[in-house]
Length: 329
Image 1 (cartoon, rainbow, N blue to C red):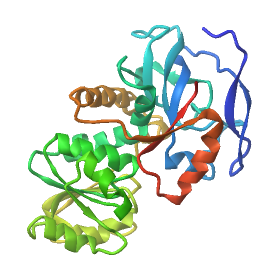
Image 2 (image 1 turned 180 degrees about the horizontal axis):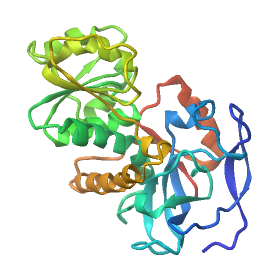
Image 3 (image 1 turned 180 degrees about the vertical axis):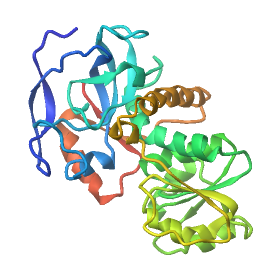
Image 4 (image 1 turned 45 degrees about the vertical axis):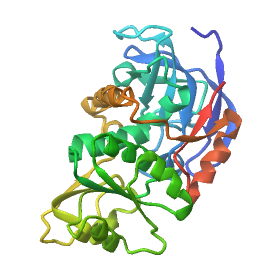
């Protein structure tokens, strides 16, 4: 248990403000929570989007952002069972509370997944937001099956990098979009076919790669409105899923596809404790697949804590490959 009173943190001093480096009080333990000494965090587009989004207004500033945490239990709340000081965990933290862009953070114990000792800190930190989104979409919603085909938008991105590997582990044929410079990266993850979204017609290529049938599953992670055009590349009774909300207008089709929507942070945004606890369960499910060796880390860059803000701002271009991990030590 730390005796420090303050910690290093990346601070947001006002809604829409700039990120700065400073000191913040170390959070005090709560009955149902664990205090985590952060070993690594990873960066997501939602982290910089939350700086300006209006649907969350934190009660006090400076605020500490971040949703992905991997670290060591430093203190255990009085109502917590099953965890002890020294346990290694990863978790998706509550975006409505202060996050892990700091040396310490609080996480509800029943939303944490224990990290295997052999797993690196950077890989553990890459799993909660993007890894669990991919798992939730493909395994929980699509219920993907061997021999089926799937189209994954933005295969080189954080969610796409995990989704390709999960799909291949389940025996699916994988088609993905990427820039030509990222072809080798996504092929190494397991993609069977790539589409150059700058030059090629997505629907035409989906038909070509599936002998005219269309794909069985489409994972949309770029723009939900793509659903209204890409359904033409979907097989009869196929499924589409958006991780960015529903399309503005979904035209009826004769393909009978099923449309899903997931937002991995929604359990926290809606104060739904069952959904939050389910994140930990999904974490353990995903670890079973990782243990087979069929899924590898998607971290392509590691940076020290003092490069966190700079690295987060660099993600606004939308061309980050895999995940950026921030190492605290």
